[in-house]
Image (cartoon, rainbow, N blue to C red; front, side, top):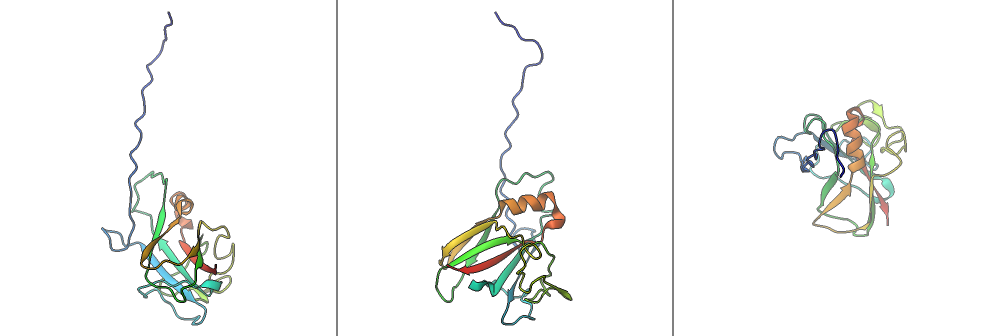
Length: 181
């Protein structure tokens, strides 16, 4: 017969995943900021616009940021994060490749333009176009050949959100860039 000495092992309860939705105006969440940058009107801020725009050839880019501080539980472990955008229209109706990149430079929703990240603070390259200076050159997700309208577009931003939870001071959101398919 075999005998054992010492305490009997106990199993650890598996945590139950919790879904947290951070949508401006839903519940008590008011930490979303967004705008777009338009090369054809380079000094106009669009933070008050009710829609975001993205065009191919990187001549119109969208910026989005979700403040996480105070909205997520302490010691949260992020297992999945999805950016969901409702596509209302397309013009022209050609397929687009859309990429989400982490922004590495601070920007201001109300004063950000094609030329400036914030009032008096220029982008490294106008339009948030500098890989490494304005955005991380490795994209978080890509949708190739996207052309649907009237549906939700989902992009995986798990790695970005994990980084922002660990280093909140690096949360400058994402830039969405469009490319011809």
